[in-house]
Image (cartoon, rainbow, N blue to C red):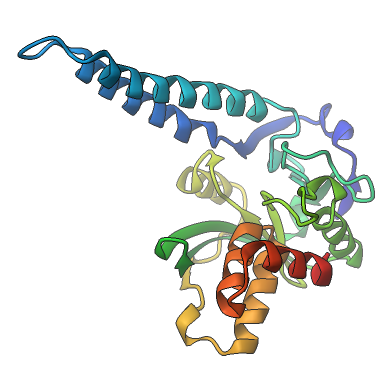
Amino acid sequence: MQFINDSSITDAPVVQTFKNASWRSLAWVVLIMAVITAYVAIPKSGPTNPVLIAVPAMATLFFAGLGLWHFNRCRNQRNWLVKATELGLYINLQPNVHVPPAAEAALAIFLPSESIASITRVQEYRRIPGRHGEFKNSFTYFDICLHEALHDELLIALAHIRRNPARRGVVGYRKDLFGGVRLEDQYTIRLVWDWMTPRELAAEAWFAQRYTMGETKKFSGPGWGKMTGPEKDAYIDTLWEWGEVQDAIHLKSLKDTISERRAAIELADRLG
């Protein structure tokens, strides 16, 4: 494993780049809102009330503007998670373009092909209490298992990234972070495949042509209602460290029956 700067990757012969493309979800919203606007605007039995046309039209413009802003963000040179070369994989430790990179941490690592034992697609199904009832979601990961144990330096670098001062909110707690890299165990790096392109099946097919693939894993996350108090505390801490800050704050407020602001401050004071 080699710790490197982002600038040293640009000259490498990259054969495939995997990056965030979350702007596409907004593009679909804009398309749907535009169709609704057009349908409302079409005269029916009589003239259409301009207000009825203006409401979906304004929503369309709003989401279009938001989509363009997000599209420009996704064009940032830092917006990539994996860059593959014939010699191995570059892993971006700080792919979140919404905050400046943590100065104390490395920007990327390089994994030579011979150091990779296998790559496995993992599917997690999670059910936790949301603000409007039980929230269900699924998450896709790719686990990169190495032949040798991971360096402690990587653990320290990820800790610096999670505690990046640029992620502080107005009341001192951390913002949600697209945490693209996690450590599953001492031999395994987990890549979070949220809103990535190519999508997980295409990425799995691409990896399978070049690396040994493990059998796809599927599991359900812990059930909130079946957890004990200490288990809930541990799960909240895990979500916070993963960068899923808003979920951690909500569950903390639910468990301790306190305001979300109070929950956020307590988590920030304890976990940083």
